[in-house]
Length: 138
Image (tube, rainbow, N blue to C red; front, side, top):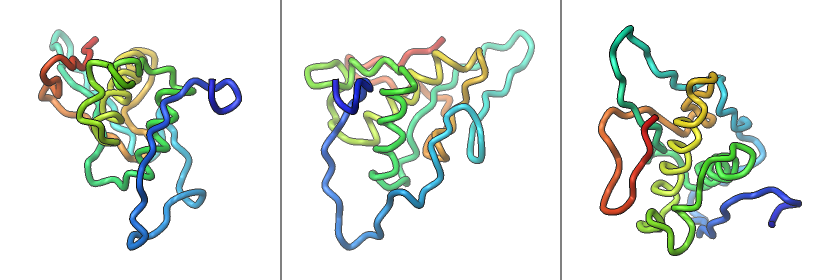
């Protein structure tokens, strides 16, 4: 295990030197609440089909931090986005973060988990599943 026993998915990314650096000055990832957290609306007797995905406009460095949390401390099921997994391709931070965020949120939404990830995630009502990659819905 990497990172002192922490389970996680590390994906190497190339940083464009023409973009500003991102790092310790960012707010901590707080998937269970805080600013930018999306909470699913609940209507009596109505089945809301919502998925939690990464915002494509967020810098990859920021998404990487949130992805590391989701697959590490957040205990999302990230096996499908590992090499040879059903959801490994496309091999992008946005695609992998989307899968991990949804895995975390679907597992934790009934116990107060939110789709926030420090403002890097959003709720959508169209199934993001593709080919053999299925995003769970609980």
